[in-house]
Image (cartoon, rainbow, N blue to C red):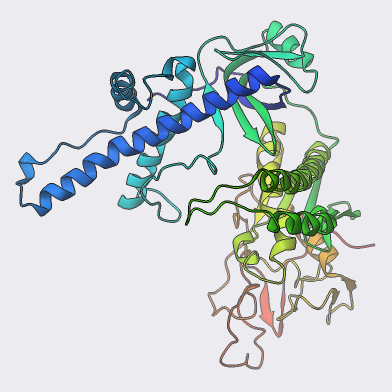
Length: 485
């Protein structure tokens, strides 16, 4: 299938807007999402039935050329087979015409993508962890969503309503006359709309092709280094020597008291049990909704905080430097996993990635093994070890005493002056030093070294960027590093 390309000067964006549907529209949205789930399950059964049939025939000794043919899982093939089956299949015959064709197309497209990912993962063409065979989506756990690509999709002139195919006009939770103005002026065109049930309410995501307009940042020539943490969410150190902090609101910790009370109420009710076919009681569903409402509020507060932080950063600085943190490994620490998840380090980097690209600024990701906390931001000497329990950096060479997070922020800001324009991790204009065994430089070492560092050796070579000489403590080039006042 040919990939969509926006016209020159335009870019593809998405606007996520909350909906306020009435009772009738609410039922239509749920019906379309349920139809998408039913079509997905039909596609999974349609494809896997041929697989199991071939496996059974092979066990009977049937020759290869006489086995049941493979069923293709491309979207056109699935759509054609579904249209032939929906009128006679008792599962769809009585109600398939109540929903838009886009609802069934959503489920079939998701199933086609799932089988394609499985095949690529099994053959080694897909990166990441191995993906198993697509399974059925249960009614209680499936995410309610439906995507519309054809039909009437528009924002009404009053800016308070949006029209979707077969569903009709739905009231928006907020006034979006700005989108209507851009569409009328010819600066925006709606490509598709996705209705989705998320955090206890319905949202619509309008995928649009909008004219790309660069907005000048406040300080285009200034770089900022961001050191993310738990005690303080972000320590900001710019290339002008100005230091700032972004406090960690810890929304999940603040909601723990309410969550404990709500969870106790849920545990006292009769919940669902699939082993014995027990259905949840009405009081359990009511208590569970009250608990989910607390989780939704925490998620909304976290999302609002992160968006405000990242938007402020990309609006002010021309270059942003962050670390390549191994968030998955940090989340396996049973003492810090909840706070690491609440801080959402990966979400901060994801937002900075697309917002800097939209603004036309630069995002630099430092190498994962770059010793930002162990390097002196004044003289460049790298410490061999600096445990997490030591929160103050003390340089043995120049006597600098500074908070370790602030020191890391200054080192990250100085890294922008030595990095090429690509902004990828480890892409530095520095000569590589001679390879030496790694030791204390790694920040996440699971086992202790078997032998201690010898005389004149400070634990191994400097991880990327590799620069400087090694005489006891290692010396880095400090020509591009700002001097502290």
